[in-house]
Image (tube, rainbow, N blue to C red):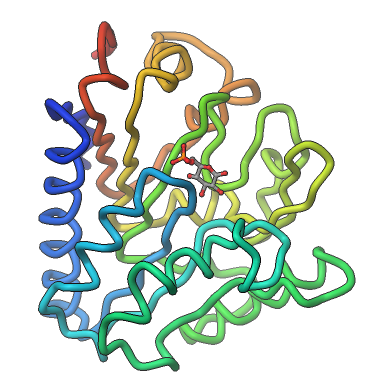
Length: 242
Ligand SMILES: O=C1O[C@H](COP(=O)(O)O)[C@@H](O)[C@H](O)[C@H]1O
């Protein structure tokens, strides 16, 4: 399967390429399987992409939107990945409300929220417990520390292999996150990475040998397509081992 690194001159070109790729993957999924399941990332990088997608002419009734990670805050909180996506994208396009599947953040125990999202994903895909569904597209970001989704360095979430969704942790705060096995099952995984602050982590991730416990994005090894889309600031001096 394709594993590629694509470097664009600036953030605008990066976003435009990500837009074209997402639209193409959505159209292919709908043509081939009559629906497209997408898991989104949070953070600042994808925001212009989400604004562009809000204006796209897409088969919205065939698209299911999920999130690959979420901060454990209500949707109205400024840190909510769902809240951000809703404001920038979903409120401005004709997607049916039933197609939008935010991670729950209303349980007293975040473990219950993770278990509930796990259950919901299996039910939506019509699968039995123990199965791993294949999302058509998983969009990922990466933090300066090499985390992706809410798989943070040296945290317990990195070793969870028996669930689809688990509890991650950032500075003592819980987050809900897809696990490696769920991400790795996707048909297409697209990293979107911008800015010079990402250079060090990218250098470690693409080094011939290294440690996914310290740089969790290195642990993403999907069986499907894997595309790393970087702008020139992020990809500067990156040596890619073949
Ligand atoms: O904490 C998070 O950050 C990463 C990267 O964010 P960015 O602001 O550097 O784009 C993001 O992928 C993740 O979903 C989010 O929860």
